[in-house]
Amino acid sequence: MAVIWPSLLFLTLVSAKYTADWDSLDARPIPQWYDEAKFGIFCHWGVYSVPAYRSEWFWWYWKGTQPDVNVVSYMEKNYKPGTTYADFAKDFTAELFDPKEFVDTVQASGAKYFVLTSKHHEGFTMWPSRTSWNWNSLDIGPKRDIVGDLKDAFKTTNVRYGLYFSQFEWFNPLFIEDGHHNTSLYSKLISYPQMLEIVSKYRPEIVWSDGEWDKTDEYWRSREFLAWLYNSSPVKESVVVNDRWGAGTIGKHGGFFTYSDHYDPGKLLARKWENCMTLDKNSWGNRRTMKSEDVHTVYELISQIARTVSCNGNVLLNIGPDMHGRIPPIFEDRLREMGKFLDLQQTFGTLQKYRDRKHHQGLYNAQLQKQTIIYAWVLNTNFDVLELDCVKLTKQTKVTFMSTDRSIIPGQPGSALRISHGDVPWRDLLRRDVFILKIEYAAGETRDPLNP
Image (cartoon, rainbow, N blue to C red; front, top):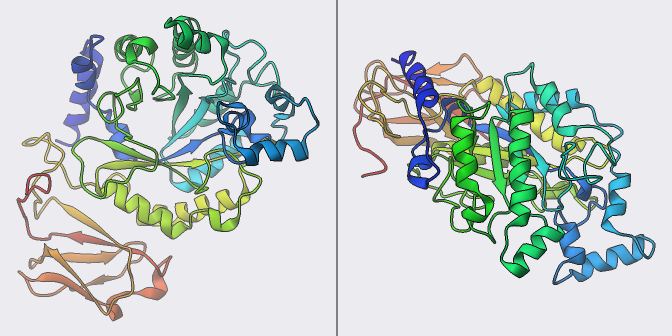
């Protein structure tokens, strides 16, 4: 049944015709690859990597409606009078950028998908867009097609390639004019053509929309775009999208839900969702002022992945390369160390409860003694006796410490799983602050956590 079901899903996606209304678009299933991926890498990279101060919103903090005094002061102290944001693009040379190094780091992290900012709110496109003359990565700065170079580099891997796209641009004259006169020239001439362009040219399997909040989905032509994406685009079978398609759509319409940045509900959700979070706790873009304590520890990252996946979510962890095209070493170290742990556990793709696809199509199914494997992530190792009340033992129950060959006899049938501190093979574990138990043949149970 596990073999038949994906084929049926594939045929459904190919043959379905979706209309440009939310009832139809929301009914499209999440592609299975995304549901099983669990973990991806986000990459915020653009002209804002040159000043590399405060955050990727630097331009807005400097020249927006309410300038940040610290950002203004930083510019006055460190740059000559008359400097404009456009001047930073000349220094965004990315002369050390090697797409293969990006790929190597992402693969080492254990991530199954990668999402690049094709355009942030500054409007600078990381590909030679036909609607962004002299404000793109081929005309100025790197003098190369960043989106295309990374796409090509990921082709030979099993990592899915996705693109983030900002709907609006802070200082685009057309967008400002639309706001004054209630017109839609910007979406008609800029944002909508750019979305069609990146999908047709680069075939991303994730389209991660953002910056949509001030305008309706009608203004952005979101439903029209999604109907084309699902019905006719070159990635119609495999593409997945988020929920940021116009004011009021977040957490309501689209593909997987994000709700907000750094979203962590702490409970099981019926709808597939994504926790997009930053490795640097204070910024999505590169920061010159970042300190080591600003970067999440590997333990914090592992804990967040465990919390998120157990609640039916994926983690999209962001990194911010510098203006030269390098991933900061502390980011790389974190990703590689985390990848070692995740690789040894070999639990991705099986972290969710088993789905009996013949009898159930919902999120949660009854735990079946002969068919369910439970992976228990133990995040607090300061215990004398660890007791898992929800895991009832049978005569066949087997408990193994992942990343080792050590198993234990868990106890008497009918009792709860209990593990003493001395049962744990601490010397054999990769880490001392977290470990994973693989539990086979636990007693069956029928309680649905979504409807207790």
